[in-house]
Image 1 (cartoon, rainbow, N blue to C red):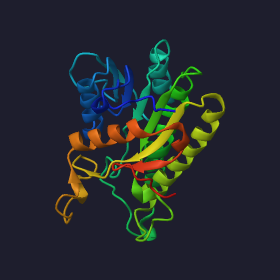
Image 2 (image 1 turned 60 degrees about the vertical axis):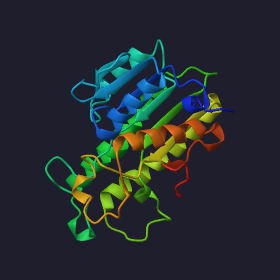
Image 3 (image 1 turned 120 degrees about the vertical axis):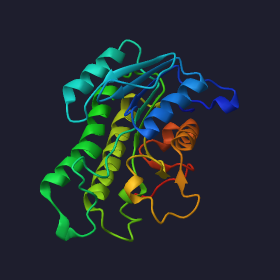
Length: 251
């Protein structure tokens, strides 16, 4: 059983309609551009400001991860012609006030933790709630959310980054739950988390020093990698997390 998104490199079609939540970020914008280049006819491009990349078929819309009503409204607009691919390309590592990942439990702050969980876990979960709710039965579709390898519990060997790790681990669990639930009514669905690697974006900029040569990826390469991975996934792999190479990230 094939994924809803097919690789244009294989001569097959890409999704006719796609939605990218977080289209103003480095990866989100690159995903919109790559989908348009690959032949997707309609790309709903969401951001807080309601602005998206320029291009034929790109339809900007406004949403706020902390405002469920805005997410529900966006989904309602898409209900008549639901996307075959939805990507929640959202996430935060350093908060707007400059608060970064905690390197020790002594720096834990409940307000900062709540903000990270709201943006990295609850927001994407609400996107899933409303977008999965408009998907018709009997049709293949893919829902993906940007996760991170540091959300893996079994692969955690360094500790630290407590709120960020916890938010991504919780997101991975929710994606697994959603996949199990949707499989009962939408057996052709694919619901996954994606680890894009270290991408040259605003999220990673404060942490790029000391990276090995070749470890930093451009948003354009990251988008191409992620779309290639999604093209190869099947419903049997739903509920898991995959990195930019297509390798499964351990739970």
